[in-house]
Image (cartoon, rainbow, N blue to C red; front, side, top):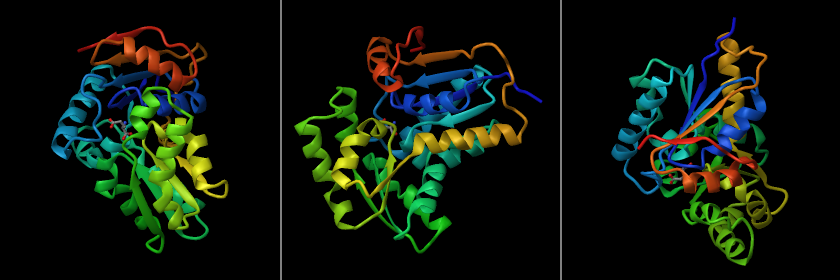
Length: 265
Ligand code: DGL
């Protein structure tokens, strides 16, 4: 059995390309439709109602592209709106929180896990609830790191300012003596080096993007819906604002040139 339809991925903007990149690496035969809501980013500062309304529209867009699976790349949407989306649509929909939380619960030895994300993700306590579901004995310490998103978008992936911001944000997590830290935002894997340096090399960093890619593979293979094509896969990128900024920042995320981004605003 094989399903040639594309995988749909959406995010509030360009950040979800960290998820697209991991899915592409793990499932190179799959076609992909990516939608970045660049006209309305950021989501991390908005209310649940607004985020859910935008997310429903984003899934509707992907449904019109006849996708076989929707991957919610955005941690904020996964934290606040995933359950609602699952109830609204018949297509399988997965988010990054569950896979990231499970990986952290597997990784921790001291049973002390940290989570960083946007303020909306952290306020929702979704990662904490998902970790406690796996093992109620795990202590979870969390911190919102809102300045990380603009730093990444500006390309400030290292340097004294980024180091200083990281050490201020991460100090309480260091004090909590965690041994595992979930990078619970699309942008944070690009700051991996800075975060690792601030936390110390004994802390394991969990990349939710990598974990959700594994979940996508598992779901498709158990449904017999992997694409068994031999031709090169196709990626289509859509954004809700004009594409020039997306194109520029996308190269940083995908580590390659991106062409052919369509604006659907
Ligand atoms: N994509 C968002 C997330 O992963 C970060 C950017 C935003 O605030 O929209 O939480």
